[in-house]
Image 1 (tube, rainbow, N blue to C red):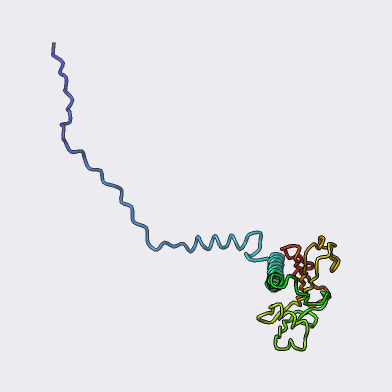
Image 2: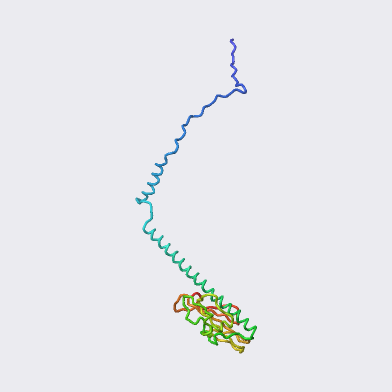
Amino acid sequence: MQGIRYQTPKIARIGAVAPRVLPLSVPPPSWPMDCSSASRNMGSRRELRDGRSAGFTLIELMITVTIIGVLALLATVGYARWIRTSKTAEATAMLGAIKSAQETFRAERLRYADVSVGNLDTHYPTSAPTDAKVAWNPAGCLSTPICAAFLTLNVQAESLVYYRYSTIAGAATGAPITYDGRTTPAANDPWFIAKARGNLNNDAVLSYYWITSFDTTISNVNADE
Protein backbone atom coordinates (compact mmCIF):
# COMPACT_ATOMS: atom_id res chain seq x y z
CA MET A 1 0.00 0.00 0.00
CA GLN A 2 1.37 3.23 -1.13
CA GLY A 3 2.02 5.53 1.76
CA ILE A 4 0.16 8.88 2.04
CA ARG A 5 2.40 11.93 2.03
CA TYR A 6 1.48 15.09 3.83
CA GLN A 7 2.75 18.47 2.69
CA THR A 8 3.92 20.58 5.54
CA PRO A 9 2.60 24.18 5.23
CA LYS A 10 5.18 26.85 4.82
CA ILE A 11 5.63 29.11 7.83
CA ALA A 12 6.62 32.69 7.28
CA ARG A 13 9.95 33.50 8.61
CA ILE A 14 10.20 35.83 11.53
CA GLY A 15 11.51 39.18 10.45
CA ALA A 16 10.35 38.81 6.88
CA VAL A 17 9.39 42.10 5.22
CA ALA A 18 5.69 42.46 4.41
CA PRO A 19 4.86 43.59 0.93
CA ARG A 20 4.50 47.37 0.62
CA VAL A 21 1.05 48.72 -0.13
CA LEU A 22 1.11 51.91 -2.16
CA PRO A 23 -1.52 54.58 -1.28
CA LEU A 24 -4.04 55.61 -3.81
CA SER A 25 -2.94 58.60 -5.77
CA VAL A 26 -5.40 61.50 -5.14
CA PRO A 27 -4.72 64.70 -7.01
CA PRO A 28 -4.52 67.80 -4.71
CA PRO A 29 -7.35 70.29 -4.94
CA SER A 30 -6.79 73.29 -7.06
CA TRP A 31 -6.27 76.58 -5.15
CA PRO A 32 -7.92 79.01 -4.80
CA MET A 33 -11.10 77.08 -4.73
CA ASP A 34 -13.99 78.40 -6.77
CA CYS A 35 -16.63 79.46 -4.21
CA SER A 36 -18.42 81.84 -6.51
CA SER A 37 -21.09 79.37 -7.45
CA ALA A 38 -21.90 78.60 -3.80
CA SER A 39 -22.03 82.31 -2.99
CA ARG A 40 -24.31 82.97 -5.91
CA ASN A 41 -26.61 80.17 -4.81
CA MET A 42 -26.80 81.48 -1.23
CA GLY A 43 -27.35 85.05 -2.41
CA SER A 44 -30.06 83.99 -4.79
CA ARG A 45 -31.83 82.12 -2.01
CA ARG A 46 -31.76 85.23 0.18
CA GLU A 47 -32.93 87.49 -2.60
CA LEU A 48 -35.66 85.19 -3.79
CA ARG A 49 -37.06 84.34 -0.37
CA ASP A 50 -40.82 84.66 -0.63
CA GLY A 51 -40.33 86.32 -3.98
CA ARG A 52 -38.80 89.49 -2.41
CA SER A 53 -35.32 90.97 -2.47
CA ALA A 54 -33.36 91.27 0.80
CA GLY A 55 -33.55 94.68 2.60
CA PHE A 56 -35.68 96.82 4.94
CA THR A 57 -39.38 97.15 4.51
CA LEU A 58 -41.16 100.47 4.97
CA ILE A 59 -42.57 99.34 8.33
CA GLU A 60 -39.10 98.38 9.57
CA LEU A 61 -37.73 101.78 8.54
CA MET A 62 -40.61 103.56 10.28
CA ILE A 63 -40.01 101.59 13.48
CA THR A 64 -36.28 102.39 13.37
CA VAL A 65 -36.91 106.11 12.83
CA THR A 66 -39.44 106.13 15.70
CA ILE A 67 -37.00 104.48 18.10
CA ILE A 68 -34.26 106.94 17.16
CA GLY A 69 -36.67 109.85 17.70
CA VAL A 70 -37.68 108.60 21.15
CA LEU A 71 -34.06 108.11 22.20
CA ALA A 72 -33.16 111.59 20.96
CA LEU A 73 -36.08 113.10 22.92
CA LEU A 74 -35.07 111.30 26.12
CA ALA A 75 -31.49 112.47 25.70
CA THR A 76 -32.61 116.08 25.18
CA VAL A 77 -34.89 116.06 28.24
CA GLY A 78 -32.22 114.43 30.37
CA TYR A 79 -29.59 116.95 29.29
CA ALA A 80 -31.91 119.90 29.99
CA ARG A 81 -32.67 118.54 33.47
CA TRP A 82 -28.96 118.03 34.13
CA ILE A 83 -28.29 121.65 33.15
CA ARG A 84 -31.03 122.92 35.47
CA THR A 85 -29.77 120.74 38.32
CA SER A 86 -26.27 122.15 37.91
CA LYS A 87 -27.74 125.67 38.15
CA THR A 88 -29.61 124.90 41.38
CA ALA A 89 -26.26 124.21 43.01
CA GLU A 90 -25.85 128.00 43.14
CA ALA A 91 -28.90 128.38 45.39
CA THR A 92 -27.83 125.72 47.86
CA ALA A 93 -24.26 127.05 47.99
CA MET A 94 -25.38 130.65 48.60
CA LEU A 95 -27.87 129.65 51.28
CA GLY A 96 -25.13 127.68 52.99
CA ALA A 97 -22.91 130.75 52.87
CA ILE A 98 -25.70 132.94 54.32
CA LYS A 99 -26.27 130.48 57.18
CA SER A 100 -22.56 130.38 57.99
CA ALA A 101 -22.36 134.19 57.91
CA GLN A 102 -25.43 134.52 60.14
CA GLU A 103 -23.93 132.19 62.74
CA THR A 104 -20.70 134.20 62.71
CA PHE A 105 -22.70 137.44 63.04
CA ARG A 106 -24.59 136.05 66.04
CA ALA A 107 -21.39 134.87 67.71
CA GLU A 108 -20.09 138.44 67.55
CA ARG A 109 -23.28 140.41 68.26
CA LEU A 110 -25.57 137.91 70.02
CA ARG A 111 -28.22 138.30 67.32
CA TYR A 112 -28.76 137.54 63.66
CA ALA A 113 -28.73 140.15 60.90
CA ASP A 114 -32.17 141.20 59.61
CA VAL A 115 -30.91 141.96 56.11
CA SER A 116 -34.36 142.08 54.45
CA VAL A 117 -35.92 144.05 57.31
CA GLY A 118 -38.58 141.47 58.17
CA ASN A 119 -39.72 140.87 54.58
CA LEU A 120 -38.48 137.81 52.66
CA ASP A 121 -39.77 139.38 49.44
CA THR A 122 -37.09 142.06 49.73
CA HIS A 123 -34.29 140.30 47.89
CA TYR A 124 -31.01 140.95 46.15
CA PRO A 125 -30.41 141.28 43.26
CA THR A 126 -33.55 143.38 43.21
CA SER A 127 -34.77 142.40 39.72
CA ALA A 128 -37.24 139.57 39.15
CA PRO A 129 -35.54 136.20 38.53
CA THR A 130 -35.34 134.87 34.96
CA ASP A 131 -33.33 132.28 33.09
CA ALA A 132 -30.50 134.81 32.64
CA LYS A 133 -27.73 135.57 35.10
CA VAL A 134 -27.38 139.02 36.66
CA ALA A 135 -24.53 140.71 38.44
CA TRP A 136 -24.09 140.82 42.20
CA ASN A 137 -22.64 144.30 42.26
CA PRO A 138 -20.96 145.33 45.53
CA ALA A 139 -19.96 148.65 43.94
CA GLY A 140 -23.61 149.68 43.75
CA CYS A 141 -24.44 148.78 47.33
CA LEU A 142 -24.36 152.36 48.62
CA SER A 143 -27.60 153.04 46.76
CA THR A 144 -29.15 149.63 47.49
CA PRO A 145 -29.78 149.09 51.21
CA ILE A 146 -30.25 145.32 51.03
CA CYS A 147 -26.97 144.93 49.15
CA ALA A 148 -25.22 147.01 51.79
CA ALA A 149 -26.81 144.84 54.46
CA PHE A 150 -25.49 141.69 52.77
CA LEU A 151 -22.03 143.29 52.75
CA THR A 152 -22.36 143.93 56.47
CA LEU A 153 -23.17 140.23 56.84
CA ASN A 154 -20.09 139.56 54.71
CA VAL A 155 -22.09 137.77 52.03
CA GLN A 156 -21.59 138.39 48.33
CA ALA A 157 -21.49 136.31 45.18
CA GLU A 158 -18.19 136.02 43.34
CA SER A 159 -19.91 135.83 39.93
CA LEU A 160 -23.23 136.35 38.17
CA VAL A 161 -26.26 134.69 39.78
CA TYR A 162 -29.54 133.12 38.65
CA TYR A 163 -31.31 133.35 42.02
CA ARG A 164 -32.46 136.19 44.26
CA TYR A 165 -31.64 136.05 47.98
CA SER A 166 -33.15 137.42 51.18
CA THR A 167 -32.83 136.77 54.89
CA ILE A 168 -34.77 137.97 57.93
CA ALA A 169 -34.06 137.61 61.65
CA GLY A 170 -35.57 138.29 65.03
CA ALA A 171 -35.23 137.92 68.78
CA ALA A 172 -36.48 135.04 70.87
CA THR A 173 -40.24 135.25 71.40
CA GLY A 174 -41.14 131.79 72.60
CA ALA A 175 -43.68 131.56 69.76
CA PRO A 176 -43.46 129.89 66.34
CA ILE A 177 -42.49 131.98 63.34
CA THR A 178 -44.72 131.89 60.26
CA TYR A 179 -43.26 132.57 56.80
CA ASP A 180 -44.30 131.68 53.22
CA GLY A 181 -47.07 129.41 54.53
CA ARG A 182 -44.66 127.55 56.79
CA THR A 183 -44.32 127.49 60.56
CA THR A 184 -41.20 126.99 62.64
CA PRO A 185 -40.93 125.54 66.14
CA ALA A 186 -41.15 127.95 69.06
CA ALA A 187 -38.48 130.64 68.80
CA ASN A 188 -36.85 130.27 72.21
CA ASP A 189 -33.60 131.75 70.88
CA PRO A 190 -32.71 134.37 68.30
CA TRP A 191 -33.60 133.10 64.84
CA PHE A 192 -33.11 133.73 61.14
CA ILE A 193 -34.65 132.54 57.86
CA ALA A 194 -32.90 132.76 54.48
CA LYS A 195 -34.59 132.33 51.12
CA ALA A 196 -33.62 131.90 47.46
CA ARG A 197 -36.01 132.22 44.54
CA GLY A 198 -35.39 131.44 40.88
CA ASN A 199 -37.03 130.97 37.50
CA LEU A 200 -34.73 128.80 35.43
CA ASN A 201 -37.49 128.02 32.89
CA ASN A 202 -38.44 131.70 32.58
CA ASP A 203 -42.13 130.91 33.04
CA ALA A 204 -44.80 131.66 35.62
CA VAL A 205 -43.58 128.97 38.05
CA LEU A 206 -40.85 129.98 40.49
CA SER A 207 -38.62 127.72 42.53
CA TYR A 208 -37.98 128.45 46.21
CA TYR A 209 -35.34 127.30 48.68
CA TRP A 210 -35.17 128.01 52.42
CA ILE A 211 -32.78 127.48 55.28
CA THR A 212 -33.38 128.51 58.90
CA SER A 213 -31.70 128.60 62.27
CA PHE A 214 -34.17 125.92 63.38
CA ASP A 215 -32.77 123.27 61.05
CA THR A 216 -29.61 122.46 59.12
CA THR A 217 -31.34 121.20 55.99
CA ILE A 218 -32.42 123.18 52.92
CA SER A 219 -36.08 122.76 51.95
CA ASN A 220 -37.47 123.62 48.55
CA VAL A 221 -40.61 123.93 46.40
CA ASN A 222 -40.65 123.51 42.62
CA ALA A 223 -36.99 122.64 42.45
CA ASP A 224 -35.36 122.94 38.99
CA GLU A 225 -38.13 125.30 37.78
